Length: 138
Image 1: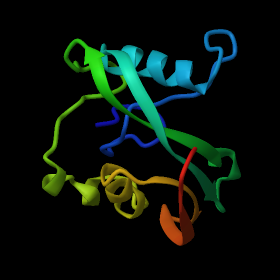
Image 2: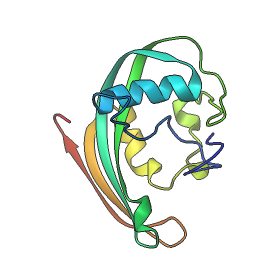
Image 3: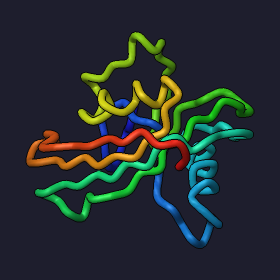
Image 4: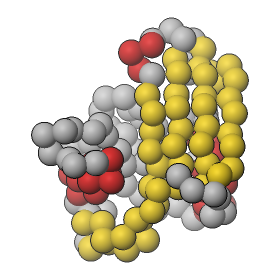
């Protein structure tokens, strides 16, 4: 559960922004953010998607998001000022308490697909249109 900032009050994956002072690349960003937000040290992960989000009412929110899945880590997820982590069974994912786009791409990623996509939001965080493409490599 996101406790502050962008996406507050929604179940969301761990994440953050690339910081060239701290990170050599986006992979290092993902590893750093996981440790900062939930106290887990990622040992192995793979990139599974790149999604672009566009907000007509707030263009400053536009962003490209690189999605990773981690299957090997050290430690147990713990709450921070940023996030309150919780495990969900795949058939119990609370899509109604997440960003509205998640129901379109997350099941594909959990089924092992790699994808790229674009989501266009209008006022009220409502999806105006979207496209998703399954790809071989990211």
